[in-house]
Amino acid sequence: MFFLIILLVSLLVRLYSLDFPLSYIFAWGDGTRDYFVANHIVLFHEYPLLGPFNLLYEAGIYNTPLYYYFLAFFLNIYNSVFTLGVVNVIFQIATIVLIYLIAKKLFDKKTAILSTLIFSFSPEILAQSDYIWQPHLSQAFAYLSLFLAVLFYFNKRFIFLFWSSLILAFSFAMHNSTLPWIPIFFLFFYRHFLKIILPFSLFMALLYLPVIIYLWQIDYSRAPFALFIQNAGQYLANFFINLEGILKAFQINNLWMVVISVLGVVYFIKSKDKKETKLTVLLLLVLFLSPIFSAATFNKFRLHYLALSLGVLTIFLGKIFTFSKYRIVTFVVGSLLLLSTTNNLQFLNFQKNSFENQKLVNDISSSILNEVGNSSFQIKSYAMDEKIFEYPTLDTIFLIPLEAKLNKKLAVLDDNSPFNHVQTGGKDYFIIACHDFSKLSRWSECLEVFKKSYPSYIIIKSLYTGPNLAIYLSKNE
Image (cartoon, rainbow, N blue to C red; front, side, top):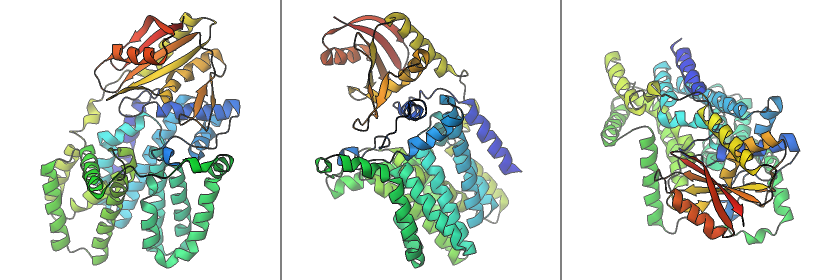
């Protein structure tokens, strides 16, 4: 009953934040790009061979378009940007259910409840509901694979392991953050390696068939493989940056690290749990650390490549904070941990006007059309971070409502573009969209960068200025 209450509150909190995917936490237009591509698949019958841009794109390692076609399936049922928002929330809730089931099956109900509470209401996890994204959906399938693997371990029915391997491949095809779990999966079930490697490989090849077709059509030799790190020292530094980042995601400071470390040692020394149970806890640590080791090859902290670590960390915490036989100790320590990891139940104080992003984008797109009339135009979007640079993925934020209002295409899907689309509108006007991720409001600097790239255009007027966004109208002289 208590779990159902957690689930209901989790659902309501996430649905309450449902809006046009205009997140300034990290999104950078990814949520709108994903709808834009899936919408073009449904409405205009454009069929991409590649998936979204990833960190290894320049090294010639491409994402499969499975994710886009998966989204298009739901848009065929009801085509709206909010459809994907609801789908995202559903998969978030599914992940919560899976974490509960895994923790309960491996350990007990106390562990499952605390794990679920931490995962459900952590601000970082709640932020996943802001916009649909590959790692968010991939995470759900990875945990479904893990749950089926757990069922096989206890029930010894091969059908569970078979489907676990296929769903793991599906999760990887959704987003390559699943990669670190694949070798662990095959090592743990090495006795069944020959039975599962063939269906796993064939299914993976089928999922990557569009990418293979794309590579067949191009000169693949132009894309050399390269890692982002240069030496072992940099790798270790990145590892600790990632570890610190994921702990911060759960508000785990140095004091809590000491508490967790002490409890972990006490658990392994003093707990009367069976050896098999303690080995399971160690395996959770391996599953937690493997994405961190993998992501250390990148030169920056990227939490979405650590998505799989989040759930197993909560199960690990749930276990070591509930193993005491004294209920009052478990309740007090567990409650303090919950308050810390949820930032004092921050979700209860969340305030937001209903569909405020949708209204903002709709008003701005109407203003754009009022200004340009029947003239041709394109969107030029700029990301304002440490540097200011043109970032076409952000174009989709306004291409979506503008295409809907005009009832025509303003761009076509293009596999040769890392942004998945190329605008086809004329160039009488350029709409300049400055998206501020640095919170410094350097609007004049954004316009200077635009002028250097397009010197023949003059700034006519400002259409909108807000805390994170400024829109300007420019005309070709």
